[in-house]
Image (cartoon, rainbow, N blue to C red; front, side, top):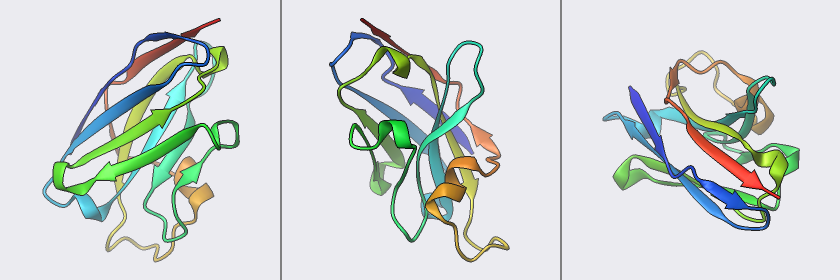
Amino acid sequence: VQLVESGGALVQAGESLTLSCVVSTSTFDDYAIAWFRQAPGKQRVGVSAIGSSDGTAYEDSVKGRFTMSSDNAKNTVYLRMNNLKPEDTATYYCAAEKIKFASHTYYSRSYLLTMKYDYWGQGTQVTVSS
């Protein structure tokens, strides 16, 4: 499985940006997909994820500003980021983990933001200037 992110850019605070991640697999529906970000000197954290029967997961600081969506026909997930803030500056990574037929039968939203993912993209840089 290969993941390729795109869409990162330098924007001003308050502006919007949409990231894309193309997932190369013939079984897209079998995977949980997540967006992570890592700021310089900080740990990588989960931002949003899909795959839970409870709905899309969002990290608290992005709730109400970020929206994750998917186009299964295109094997692509998106992260729409509105009202960007300087603290959103980071490298954003797309990650995938096969969950269908896995040992778990239920994945909570919070778990999807912290669980181990086997497949990662190369990252795309988002810089928000004040």
